[in-house]
Amino acid sequence: MSFFIISPEIYAWVILPLLIFLARICDVSLETIRVIYISKGIKYLAPIIAFFEIVIWLLAMEVVMNDLANIANFFAFAFGFAFGTYIGLVLEEKLSIGMVIMRIITTEESNEAIISFMKEENYGVTCMDAKGSRGNVKMILSLVNRVDVPRIKAHIEKTNPQAFFSIEDVRYVNEGVFRPKQSNIFSGLFHSLGSSRKKM
Image 1: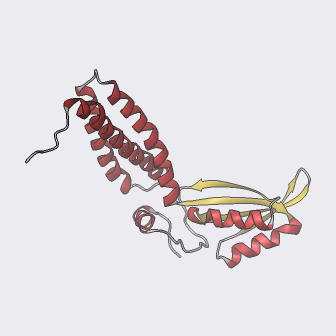
Image 2 (image 1 turned 120 degrees about the horizontal axis):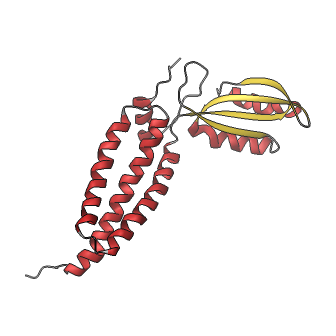
């Protein structure tokens, strides 16, 4: 009975670089998510992620250091770092962790549609009169779950495309009116473990 045997050349120049590449994607993706969790005050999951991140990094680094003459390992290490950074950002966007402040600036004639929508969808709304370079405007402030931002943006762009809005991350929230967060199993787990927001 014959067995498939991988030649040393294929193992050294193909399989090992591929494993390094995949390891780097994993550890850099974890690093990106860990940094984001730290910035949002999610202190329980960050150390756990850091443990697995450094273990994977050490394994990849050991392989590279054991064969410094293999240029394929260096390229795999670098490309894995690049792809891991991108994938980490994509994962963070999919998880939609935390809350943001939306600042919406619109004319007084067209702000009622936005305010009505926000209230109907159970978003807390604070309205202020302001003066812009072209006259009086209304500033609408709302604290929303990050996962809800695309829905709000779509409504604003549809009903009031001239409105200006900006979005800012929030680390801690104490009190307020919030729309219940609809999330997937992973973001729901992370949110329940790490969120410091008080429920009303």
